[in-house]
Image 1 (cartoon, rainbow, N blue to C red):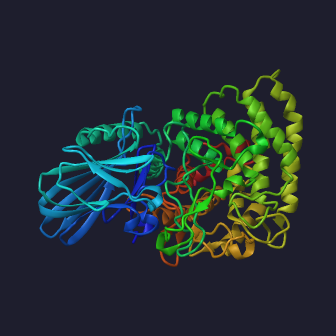
Image 2 (cartoon, rainbow, N blue to C red):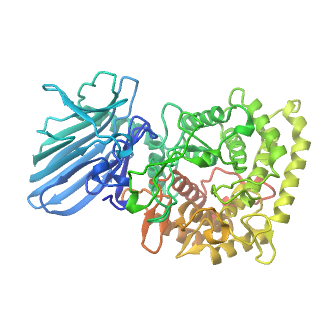
Image 3 (cartoon, rainbow, N blue to C red):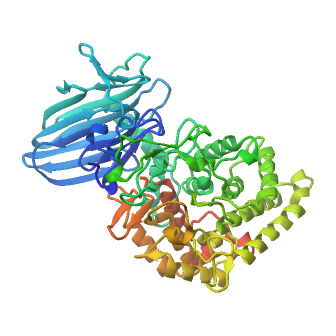
Amino acid sequence: MASLIENYGFVGNMHGSALVSREGSVDWLCMPRFDSAACMAALLGRDEHGCWMMYPGSTVRRVQRRYRPGTLILETDYECDGGAVRLIDFMPLRRGPEDQHALIRIVEGLEGTVPLHLFLSVRFGYGGYRPWITQTDGGPIEMTVAPNAMAFSSPAAITVDGQDLRGLIAVRAGERIPFELAWHASEAPCPSRVDAESKLEQTERDWREWSGRSTYQGAYRDIVNESLVTLRGMLYAPTGGIIAAPTAALPEEIGGTRNWDYRYCWLRDATLTLNALMVGGYATEAATWREWLLKAIAGDPAQTQIMYAIDGERRLTEFEIPWLPGYEESRPVRIGNAASEQFQLDVYGEVIHAFYEARRLGVPEARDIRRPARALMDFLESSWQKPDDGIWEVRGGRRHFVHSKMMAWVAVDRAVRIAEEFTVEDDPMRALLPRYRMLRDRIHRDVCEHGFDRQQNAFTQSYNSPALDAGVLLMPALGFLPASDPRVQGTIRAIEKNLVRDGFVLRYKPEHTGDGLPGSEGAFLACSFWLVDAYAYSGRRKDAEALFGRLLALRNDLGLLAEEYEPNSGRLIGNFPQAFSHLALIHSASVLSGAELSDRATVNGGSKQAAAVAAD
């Protein structure tokens, strides 16, 4: 049975990833890519669906774990009867195509002698296919199901037990025993064994060099930098795209059906990702992310998707895996994501906003960016009045979502600002300014007229509907209306009254929304961070800090956050770790510290709220 979601650690190499439990079991492994079919899927089933367990054979008295500072190198210490051992888990960062895709585990004896059990079960295709196991004299043990193969190497005595590997190793104080599992294409030669210790040193050096370049100096510095390291682990090195999470089908309700594959790149994360990278001073990564964004949306704007694969692939066909029972029996297990076929108006705002933020933060204008940007604006001009599926990807029919219309306004507003701030007088973009300004004002009036419920004194989820939605908390952050506006304050109060459960914010109430899905979900953590920001912009600093503190307390012992939190059970739920949660954390920290990169002073008459927050 899989562990609690918050009991997992995340290791990755900016290509693939693994989740390792406190009990020393790798229950999820995707190599060579984040979206590869998992070759260990016990996370969504049982041991028989693939795992790699390494755990002391004597009674464990205490478990402590940590990342080596500035890295995703995971260390877990087990204090046992008879001694203590340390388990070091990491995936070596690849410096070139000749480097392997591998997961390395090193066991170090700390005290006495500890028996350590090893059980390795590789099951390709999300736990569906048992491998053919072969071994040459003195060479690695190969596990193969075409087109994939895994090579296992270790100096320890390991036996082949049917289609699994087993071992019992006595680990003495001062000993270090390496274990390596490396992926290769089944038609390619088996990779040679690597020097695990040198790979460890090189990987730590590479991670520390990167994390040491962070320029963030605001409050919560250590927490922000830890989240930046987590986010880097979710960046796909070959393209610069960032996945929403390294997992699939972890439920938003234990035992429920809201189980989605998040190993893709969402356009809605565009601006937050760019700002988070720039908060840390990672301009090169921000520029690379923008280039990925530009290439992904290239072509007909009408065919722009809300998400793409890490290489820009558009076909993300959703299907169910019947042989996996799901995390704690949460069925169905879905792979792929049909939401990629939805129409979401807000992504156009996210893209244009990201283009604007890149320029404002000093990233040079991308080559040939104007043609696709203009095409996006032309499409938006003709389509903003259409209903869409909304930021939350509901499957209950299209509506005129307030957040979506607000993001259409953001797209036009940022296009205006790009022309005003970054072009000269005779630039052709200037000729579009009167047209875009008129459109911006029209969208703004439309949202305020149809998206505001005077009876509740609040902006709602969709036009002429009383249902509430946490997405409208972004109004002051995006500059649609200043936080001082009575309508914004009324919206905050309505959300506090109706969408806050046990101190945390729901996206919406499914029973009021008709999202086309049975069951419910937990509190969406990004929405709670949005309330932190709204409090801060409103001058409610104590409330902002209190809620931010409660959110920080939800991180697991490694500083990781899932998508949601279930207050009744006190558990993290949803895909893990979740980029959106960490991106929102970084933004809230920068708001509270006065280090926020966004300039509220020049957006729709807003005041210098960030400065006021910092001075409070």
